[in-house]
Length: 292
Image (cartoon, rainbow, N blue to C red; front, side, top):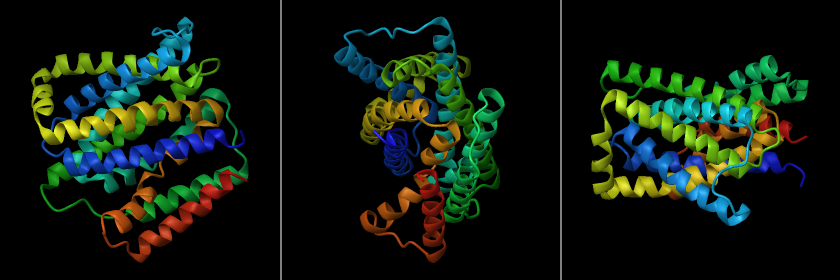
C-alpha cells in the first residue's frame, strides 16, 4: 500500500495528540513517573495479547541484536524520554512542551544519517524544515506564569524528552530490519517497563502508583494512555519507523501541536489565532512535500 508508513505515522500522531490533551487536563497532580510505569505496563499486557491473537505466541521471536537494540530503545525512549515528557506536560503544558519537542525530527535526521546512512532528498529536507518551522510557529510562546524555576525545569524535562525520543526512534529503526511492528512494540515496552521499575526503585517512588489507581481522573488518564497512546499509537509508530526514514517518521510524529488546533477550535471551543493558523498552513505545506 503506497504511503502506508506515512499514514501509520499520522495515525500514531493523532493518538498521541488526544492522549496529550487528556494528560494535560486530567493528569495534573498525579505522579508522572507513576503514570508512565502503569501506562507502559498496561500497554505491554495489551500488545502481548494482540501478539498472541495475531501470531499465536506471547514471546517475540527476535535475535539477540534485535532484543538488545529494542530493549535499549524502550529504556531510553519510554523510561527516560516519556517520563520527562509527562513531567513537562504537567509543568509547562502540552503546546510549549511540543515547541521544544519539535526539534526531534532534526536530531533524528542527523542521527539517521550518521548511524545508518539515511540520505534525504532536497525535497524532503525542505519539507522537514518547513514543517518544523510551522510547528514552532503554532506553539511559540513564553513559559506560563508561575514559578520561574518550575518553568525552566519544565523546559529541561522537555529537552531531555526530545533527546530520548530521537535516540529511541533510531535504535528502533536499527532493530526493526526483519521484525514486524507488534513484536517490536512488545520488546520496546519490556525495556520501558524494566527501566521504569529501576527508576522507581532508585528514586523510591513506588508509593506514587497507588493514588493514581484510586483516583477517578487517574484511571481516566490511564485508560486513554494505555489503549490509545500505547497500544494503537505504539504499534502504528513501529510500523512507520520500519517502512520510512527515521527523520520523516519523526516529523510526522511531531504534528501533534498542529493536530491540536482543530480539536481546540471545534471540540474545546478555544480560539485559534492567525499565527497558529499560518503555522498550521506552513506545516501542511512542508508535510505535503514528504508525500511527493
